[in-house]
Length: 176
Image (tube, rainbow, N blue to C red; front, side, top):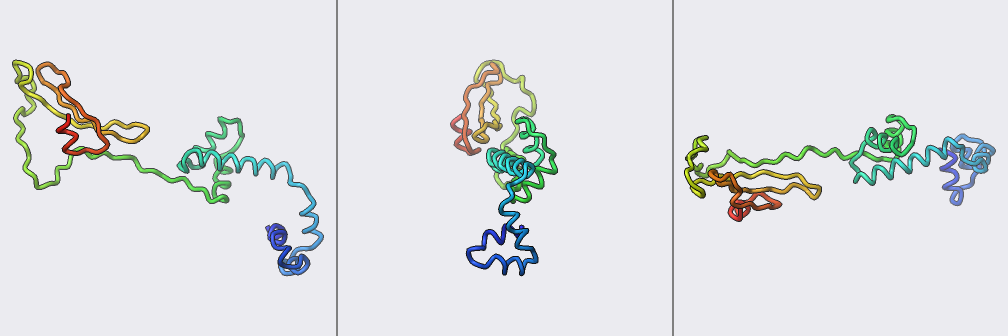
């Protein structure tokens, strides 16, 4: 670390002065400069590049356990702690994403509540188009969540109308 600092600043300050201030020998610095990196260091640098690649490919979401799993699939023999240390040194942190919670019903409002005409008796129909029921649900896709509003005829048990939308709005249900 000290030798790296000296190497980075040798055009600004004299090498012997920096060695003296940092408490290292000049011969040690010059030996460090001429010694090629060890196999261990080369492996560690290659592993660090792979860790960064996996991290970026996961949109900065994966932590050390998941990155370790991906690296093992690629044939690397590596421990979770090692990947964690590398990530910490490189300043890489996973971005924990909370679970998406869809709220399809909001009961805390001052609007009038529609009466429950059926009261859980779904066999009141004697012909088609006498009673329709509706529902809203969401579908999780790779692009995000979509809301599905559907209208069902209770007699035929067939969907009379439906509509998909990005947001749960009054228009979505009316279009269905």
